[in-house]
Length: 329
Image (cartoon, rainbow, N blue to C red; front, side, top):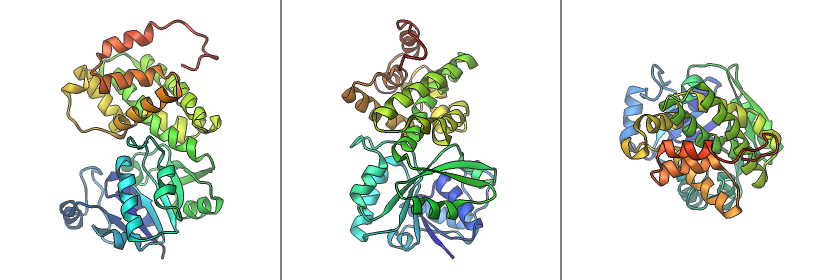
């Protein structure tokens, strides 16, 4: 029986654990919050996965040493904790097993992708990126989902693919590690923009336009960062963008929706999302590399400069007219 350790006991980590346990794996989920773990152990459910009962076979622990004693590790904690947690792992042990990175975003302290941080902190492990269109509740309910696995190691892809694959969970392989991560990270920024449009009741056409021209900005940014253009038309690009940017199941779209309704971030709760932090990282990188990203700049101004939503919409709509096929912004 394959032993899988999952770093993170949020909705996505638990959903992956449920799927893997059904595949016959011995699953152990780690979280630092002992009170949360006691509740999960006793109730075997979480409000983030309504109606889902967690199998008694799935184990929860607050011991990093225990979860590291596995054949495969999956990182399903917040992106902004990745550097700290992998540094803690390095202190405990030198691991040379696959590390599946199942979160989406860019580290705001270093402006680096998580695969880069993984190679720095855990040089002997094999990073495999898991990305694509899928909500935790759908996976936990056994609904069919297709995702992308990306790695420099073909054998790593094969092994993780066989581990994850089931009647309702189908992985596709990709060697574009950079592109798969950028697609998964930047779609959250565009989802905030479409959420704002929904909250402002700007109509379906505005949402569709933001998705389309937002994809253009994702491709522009991604190719300058070294990604392959075709990656962005796959599951980790277009697939994830369409799902996230059109559904209020997405925390990023929901954040944007609240901003649109309240006309600004200052009037809503501070339950911030990965897209909030990714916006900051992408903005900083784009300014350094002189990449024009007007939609992402508008989201940045709303989130970080208290920019007025109506003003940012006006600036976007009144830019000089351009050719659709040659314009990168």
